[in-house]
Length: 126
Image (tube, rainbow, N blue to C red; front, side):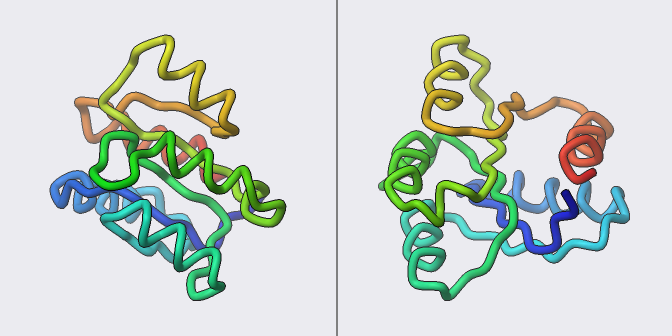
């Protein structure tokens, strides 16, 4: 599937910058919106203020974490169709299983090397 409008939900500004730079390196023709709050993202998507084909989601955020966001979008028939890719510092097997059960499309531990992030994006943004 060709993704045109992707959304990154991550509260860490450094991770946001690295993601956007890695995305540029993929040379994929996508538009990326960045939000630092899962709660804000959920509201904007549900109200139709934000259109997205694919969501990249961090798990560890204040107010509403990634697991809570996944649980909420599963309640809406339209929203649950949006693929969600987890990009998290966590690599705990129980966490991976939990987010997959909540409907996550993919789970990736945030890589330490920039080239590895580019490779992940290339893989997902086929």
